[in-house]
Image 1 (cartoon, rainbow, N blue to C red):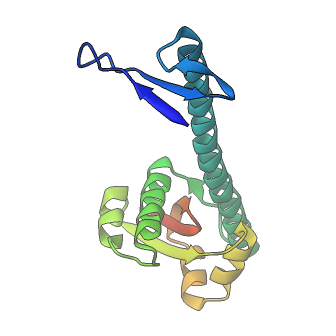
Image 2: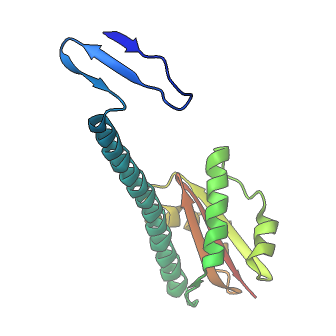
Length: 174
């Protein structure tokens, strides 16, 4: 494939033509190419937004299903269900995303999340690599400390965030 390039007449006027014996000569500044490029960019943008929205929807769905299961577990143990709190969910999601970036489980910054929550008392569970909300709940229930957090009678609000398999439950009250 031969590539013929013309000298730009101005700094912002770059053109490139591709010459191939099997393809018609097309300039990337031709109206046909510009229309095609614009269409491709529009499709790429729509797909990017759709996939980003799907990822957020999946994370929100996971968090919602896990919160429902945690509340069922509490009710089964004679405790009231927790009310979902948008601030706690945001804090939990921020922490899950930080764990995903660091590629490790941690409670780093828990005291700060507690202060930022606005509540005097908070408990936190973290998890990683559970394929479903039910599996995550089972993992927490099997751990005395995590189960104690979910069944703490002093908390009445909940926020859950999931990012790339990392999950944070933040429950607060007082």
